[in-house]
Length: 489
Image (tube, rainbow, N blue to C red):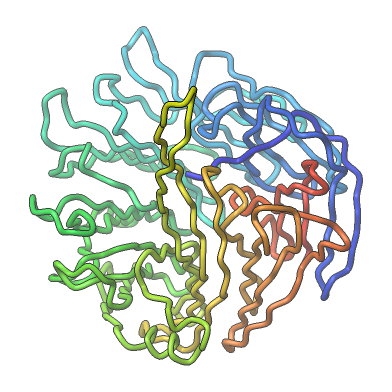
């Protein structure tokens, strides 16, 4: 999980610069302070932009919510109003309302209640809190996971809770609740998974525009461990709203090991696309990628392919990437294509550790430092059959020590005809911000988005969000001061 640092106060003004058809807007920089130094961008609408601030990256307690106007000036800053002791599970912006999902212990029933409260555009609570679900407290532990999702069209919402089935049970329960746009419950189901809760990992869960729910889970395939990673089985659990049925789809094929995986819902084609990198069973090195399609209307697996040649061809055709292998590549973004294919953005990321010796009063001491490496970015465009139409590699090397890679990695902006990959040229000091445009025809264009001579800058890639079809909002450090930054494409 990436940590998001923020300052304690904003007084913003706007700085404009026109660079290669992108308009860059900055708020006034302010001194960085330690109080409430984590931030999370919720989103923007015609009223303004909204940001959460907290003392830790979980954003569960003592959370401030702030509103900025269209010129990025701070208008309101206040603590999220909670009338009872509670944890904040999710905060989302829907139209003219901010929905805050909280969980709180009900001492009268010994249950954990999940409730929703709404805030207006002045960050005041409107109406009473709505009860979404109530789960026995004894079923919730540190391995339980909760997710609140909304569909792209904002007509459906889901609350999913993975928890123990019973005190001494060897199975796991998936509590699933669906709601309409008024947060009125339209279904409530409980499904049993024949695995221990501590063995289950969740890759992602999503909701389509018809209220169908999908979650990708994995758990041990066998008790045998492979040399590189634990042998895991991946299953897409799919709840179909119209028929009230839950189906399980095994991911990929037998005798392969999945290294990294993700999925995306294509609401236009009414399908789920799953993609990931894989190795042959008991092998250390990844061999290629797999692509799988689930048709939502027929609730069937219509396609599963394994590709071992496309990435080799791509690597050989790009001179600087001949040393790039498929190991330690992690999926950053999956974008559905209108024809049923997808665009994939993946990044090479790994940790290295170094031991060093220092002396205290003449006595040697040994310690270890962690080096965070964020390197080349892989860009792929696959057609509906899962075959690579074109691709490219963004050559970069970002290396920092013991900072969690705070200024490393990338952020992406998706337009109608291209994907922009944005990152810092130098993650150790303020400098240029670079952009790579990868269009639908596979053409790549690398540019300097912000030149250091105009504005020395470090963006915080993991604290950025595409807020509209034409804009990206990001937190940044400019001239050693914190600022909000908006890029208009």
